[in-house]
Image (cartoon, rainbow, N blue to C red; front, side, top):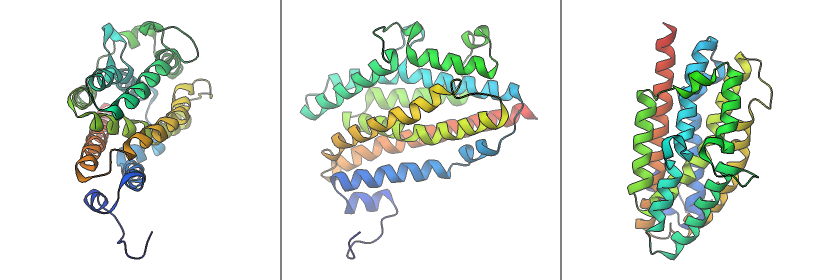
Amino acid sequence: MENNIQPVTTPEEAINQFVGEQYMEWVMDYLKQEAQSWHSLKELVEARPRPEKIKKYMLQRYLAAEAFTGGRDGDPGFLGFAIANLSESPDPLAEHALELLQGKRQEEMSGATSTADPSTNIHRELWLKLLRAVGLSNEEINRAEAKEATRNYIAELSDVYSNSEWQTTMAAFAAHEKLIPEEYGAIIAMLKNNLQLNEQDLEVLTWHSKADAKYVIETGHILDRVAVDREGKELVFEGIRRQLEARKDFYDGLSKYLHEQQQ
């Protein structure tokens, strides 16, 4: 960092001092640091809940993951909302962003296959494999209902992806991709510490932790070109902020729910 630039510790300072790629690099570091500070993730690494409590926790995390891709009852999911949003933008940059989101949705749905059937998409199948390894039956999975924390999470992010400016929508997507490895790393630790799961059981978590990195980079290249003036940087940070807040509230809510069940 140049000697004439003061250390940047807040989003407002970043908006004032950084532009383009430098701004996005700061934002991505900020996201990681924020997630690493969450008590609700830190405690997962040391958690020793009973298997029944892990089942309840993982069911809610599955429902949140399903909300990203969609699938149940034709729900388009966050990605579908974002694609519809960006499809309406006349901004040439949004066209590139739209192609990226469409590629992401295809990857989530079909992986290396050509199927796009929501009932058999690769994302869902990998999650089902993990849930069964945790000890959940198909009946328990099929009748799972979102608890308050999950409902609030889905409602908030559905609004972000559907109704925001496209720059904010893409920033929220970038934040999602950046946060997944931090979140799933903590969940993997909890599962390994408490259950006899192998790497195949955990595939949906380890796959996302690796696969999502490329979308952080590619989305960052798009947002570099957005973050050139104050308005652009503020639009980007709005997506970052709302994604962070929604996810922190979600994990805090799941943590409280888990604790209540242990009383």
